[in-house]
Amino acid sequence: MLVLTDLTRFNDSDNVCMALLDEDDCTCYRPLPYENLDFVEFRNIRPGIIVSADVIPHENPESPHVEDCTFENDVWLDCVDEQTFKDLLERSAVDSMEEAFEGIITAKNRCVPVEAPCSQSIRTIRIDPKSVTVSVVNSDEDIKLRLGFTDKAGEKFRLTPIADLCFHRMAMEYVQQDRQDELEALLAGGEEVYIRVGLSRLYKSKSGKQGFWMQANGVYIFPGYYQG
Image 1: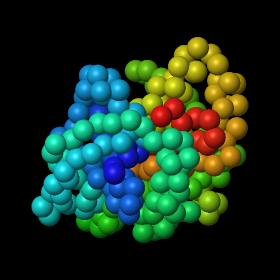
Image 2: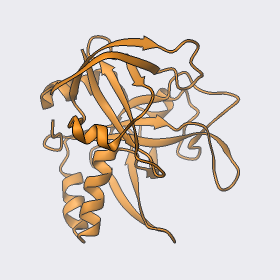
Image 3: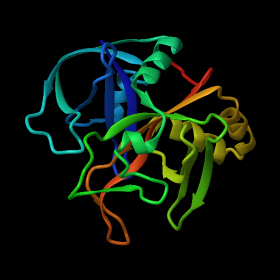
């Protein structure tokens, strides 16, 4: 049984990237090609949904995106309950970003270099539940939201891009309605927090640095936030 854990937005298109964990061994799969928002809304796809599919791994996938695959005969079913979803995240999780990304991703370095990629592009990290914050970054174009958190090893990460489609929508609604105090209360109420941290496709920053950049693919706060 596969369970969807990542529903990832793009800044410049209606594409949606999905990633799922095998409930038996926590192997991660990322089906390609990407779907779009219309497909997600039509199928009511959301974190925790169960998928039955024939998984066709891609031949010789390039690191770090070794999770790439194709789904055939896929059937989208109901969602697992909150406890089952949390247990799956827990079994797939590690305590630190250092462990998850082989010491390459740190608070001071958010980019995995092309010439020395790590072995996976998506990991689950256990987070200090009292450390999660959402910051508003104003730009010339529009409002941008950034995530702050501290992993269980005590390393602090600030201003992390939020790629989680559902969490970003929720947080943006609070911000646009000037209800940030309620958002802060929601974030502070968590007893256990997991973040699915992913690495982008190859990207060159405005400063010219090229590589695979860290982003928050899934933000899950227990109890209460999960809406499966």
